[in-house]
Length: 122
Image (tube, rainbow, N blue to C red; front, side, top):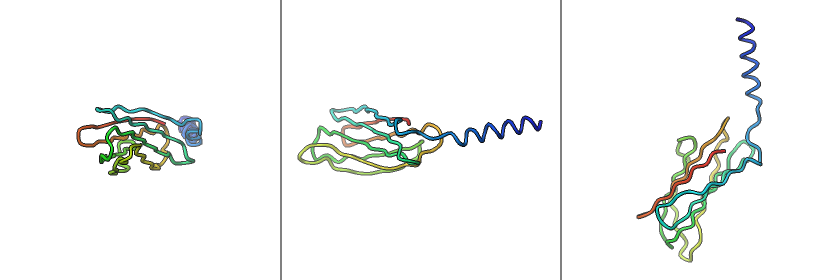
C-alpha cells in the first residue's frame, strides 16, 4: 500500500511540473456566420495568460454588434461594439488565465439579423 501511495505521489508531482503551452502553440480559427460577415479568433500564449483576439469583418457598416467571450464555459466578456462607418473590422482583445491542460475559448457575435460563432482550443 505504501508503494502505491509513493508511486501516486510521484506521478502527481511529474504532472505538476509539465510546462504549459509554448509560443508555437498559437491557434487561429475561422467562425461561421449566418450572413456575409466573417469572424476569426486567434489564441496566443502570453506567459501564464492566453491572449484572445477576435476580429469581425462586417458587411454592414455602422451596425452594432454584441460580443460574448467564454473561457471554459465561463463568461469572460460581454461587449457591444459598432462597426466603422467607413468600413473595416471590429477587434476585441482580452486576456484569460492559462489553466492546466487544454483551454477552450468561444466567441459569439450578433447583431439584428445576423450571428457568428467561433471556437478554438489551445
